[in-house]
Structure formats: C-alpha cells, structure tokens
Length: 270
Ligand code: UDP
Image (cartoon, rainbow, N blue to C red; front, side):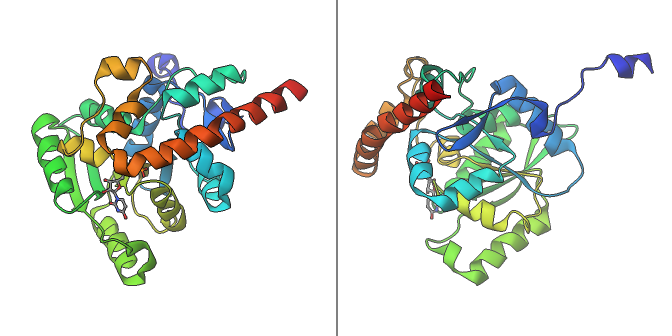
C-alpha cells in the first residue's frame, strides 16, 4: 500500500501541466521526457476517445494566423508541442518560455525505442508516398522489437474529399485498433483530417507528424544532430527540397516576425 502511495503519479490530463498561449495556439510546457510518459500512459490505457497530438513549427504558426479551421483543429488537440527551435526561441523572446523543442519526428522513434517486446506498442502508419510506409515498417521491426506494426496505408491524393476512401481508412484503423496512429500527411491536411475524424477513429493516440514516416523509411534524411543543436534543422529541410520549400519558408520568414512582434506587444501591454 505504502509503495503505491510513493509511486510518482502519471499525469494524463492537460490540466495536469502548464500551457502558454502563443501564436494562436495553446502550447504545452513540456519536455520530451515528460511528453513520452504522457503518451505512453495514453497508449497503455483502455481504448476510449482518440486523443491527438499536433506539433507547431513556424509554418503552422503562420497557417494558424490565417486559418480558422486549423485553429479549431488545434483547439481540440490533447497535446500541442513545439516542433522547432524558432518557436522555442520566439517563446523566450516574448516572455513565455518553452523548455525545449519536442519534435514529432523525435517523439515517434523515442516512443518506439521505449516499447517493450513483452507488451508491444501497436502502431499504424498512415501517410507518405506509396511503398514508403512498408519500408518504414521493415526498418521499425528490425530496430525496435517492442513495436508491432499493425497497419500501413498510403492514401491516394485527394482521399480526404472522397467519402468512400475516408471510410476505408477508418475501417482499417477500426480493424487493427492501434495504440498509436502515426499520421504523416503534411500540414495542415493531417491536422484537419484527424480533427474531422477523431470521433470515429478507433486508435488511442493519433500523432500528426509530417515527414516522420519518410524519415523512418530512410526516404528523407533528418538534419545531422550538430545542425539541429544549432537550431538549423529547417535550413537542412529547405535545402533538401528547395523547389517545394523555398517559397514556403520565404513566406514564413515574411510573416513570422510580425506574429512574434504582435505577441510581444500583447505581453507588454497586459
Ligand atoms: N503526404 C501524403 N498525402 C498527401 C500529402 C502529403 O501522404 O496528400 C505525405 C508526403 O508523402 C510526406 C508528408 O505527407 O510523407 C509530408 O510531410 P512534410 O512534413 O514534408 O509536410 P509539411 O507538413 O512540411 O507540408
């Protein structure tokens, strides 16, 4: 009895830890280690509503500024985690400091690494181009025996507007009942899709994590750690796919300072 009393309590509700209102989102003030404990607890609990996790980077903050539908999706998320260094640095500049970045593309492998073969973590990979999910599944199985990949699916382009395709995905998830649904459909599609469907999704936790399935497959390379430590992962991403990303990052670089400035002024006035 005593031992139970002395065990640290696992915090599982959003009211159990602090948040800050920043850049149009309510971001959880959590470190990676704390986040892992929370998601592990959710994944180990009996199946209930599907909780979902979003990870804002600079591009999300700009999208949030312009899009009510994304703000709505963020509003119902069970965790909102700062994905990139620029968001963490900006949080400190405006006096609402976040302790560290908790990128989705680190959270997913950390969760997999910590899974035990005696009680495997059941994972469904949803998203990425055709064949990529299968390659990711092979790598995951050989690297982390505590992970059971129960489903892999790459939806065709435009699937979100196709009722039949949508139902097919929901059915596949329902049949496999994953602990973790890794959703890699790009932003804001993944957040909007999960928000629209989370009440029907039979998964314990959905993680909206962009290119993570590509990283796990070895299809795209993460920035080296030293570049990540310098806060320059975004530069590596941009240079690895300049045709798609230069225009986006230029737009973000134009809007983000204004968003940070307005946030700072709001703090200075209050
Ligand atoms: N993707 C997908 N279906 C779509 C659009 C994108 O599966 O309709 C996948 C794409 O193949 C890639 C990921 O979504 O694996 C995009 O991740 P990224 O983080 O690059 O997207 P971003 O959020 O930066 O747009």
